[in-house]
Image 1 (tube, rainbow, N blue to C red):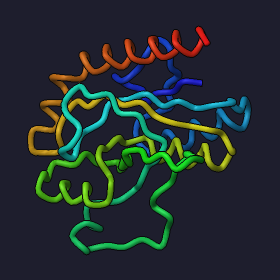
Image 2: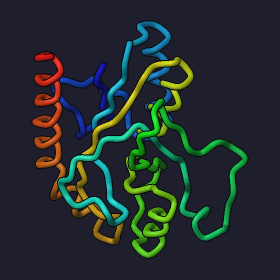
Image 3: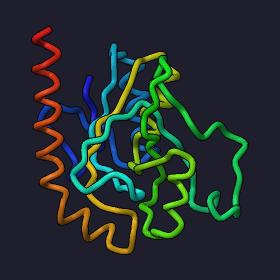
Length: 180
């Protein structure tokens, strides 16, 4: 099953789950309780901490939930804040999730030191629910912005093209998989 966030980030081939970690966790849990999918693929936009370029397509099976206060040593968590559905030794870019969009470029570059390369509000929730229901899962993202003071403006400017690129990428991948 292919899922996405919702609101202005929907696709004709994906079922919307909600915006942010809470809505996504609630709606995806409800879906899994009543009609458990065999596989979950989340599709969405993401901001880059610096290495991924605008309109890059990034695939991942690993997410984190690390708040900016952790990077400045102003907070800690007793919770596991990194999750993966990858069962091999393959390394994926870690996608960080928060209900906030980062705009401090100096601080967010520190994420790169932990292997965290991009941010998407929903992906951690998707993987956490998938783990709970033992569903293989992954995500495909198109970079719309860097995490700097222009993040929102750049997201708005690049969002439609990113959605078109994601649609093209997913439809191509589906065609490849069904040809096998």
